Picture (cartoon, rainbow, N blue to C red):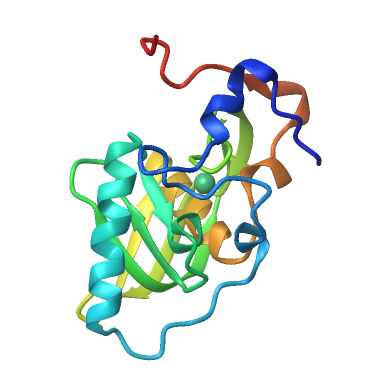
Length: 174
Ligand SMILES: [Zn+2]
């Protein structure tokens, strides 16, 4: 689906120090990101940068392609503490849920997406140790959305198009 950004939302699509997140139609968002063979200091720094950009943008998750890096690392923060996942994969999934999603790379656009209700995720942590956990409900939505980014998939590819709508994410902005 081609997204036409309404004039009043175009200021959100400028990329600068204040808005560093990569936005559509940047090609990096459509690439399949490269697996990380060994976690290095560079990845630790990358994860720190992703966390600070995500927080500044009031996001609940971010994937490396959203900061212009085509490597398989995501941060999810559906609750308080950000979790860094290296090479995350979904190994089991069950049920369905539908909820409204947006994306830092498509600011201002929202719509309903169907996701699995529950997923089991395998990944490595930022120290390179294998981890495995189950997520349900909203955290499961966030992790599915972020892992999709690593395969070049955006929520607009899965959205119920009838529910798509524009809304200013920073309504208090003057
Ligand atoms: Zn996103």
